[in-house]
Image (cartoon, rainbow, N blue to C red; front, side, top):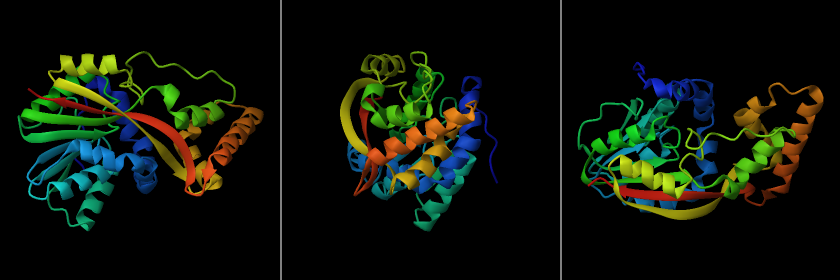
Length: 283
């Protein structure tokens, strides 16, 4: 039975997207999305530093790969994944059950306002799930309340747009010469936590201390070859073709094919990316 979702009103658009078509596409292609960022996995888990008895909260857990990893590390503890998407959580629960992970649990909720039990967790983590909060200070304060004193928050978020070739190349191709909209500073989106000064301001206002940012750069994987990556990319970003006439639509798809072909390698279609691993402490 799927529980009712009660998001904060400011998160209504995100809830519609992630509990709608966007979340359904991620659920259907869970393995591909996990593989896309697989190069960050080892470093992120090491930064989380989870031990056997820890109680861990995974924010924006999606289809649960990170939650399952954490449950294995915290074999004597607990890993709880939280997400807006019912479709992705169905995949997460099925895969945790298949792995025999009795200490992994999943909750459909808006982490910005969900009434987590106070001081119930030792560590909160998020692999690219905290960049979409409409009210980040409120959200991080709520997450902080779920951590015990001395508890840790560890996040993986994208760094500045200029260092993320994957985003620039794929969206640039599908723009077909149209100027791409520039999101308002701090607006929910992939790069909302790219600015270190803003990260420190937001987390500090939410009550966290000892805020540290570690730069990372890894290759992202988009497919076995250009044709495979084209199908995946159009499924994810095909909405960018809306409103184009037939000539510009052909131009956009041709440009996409060109950049994907240029990034083929023996390991698949790879693009450069840059991220932060952010650590903070609840005092």
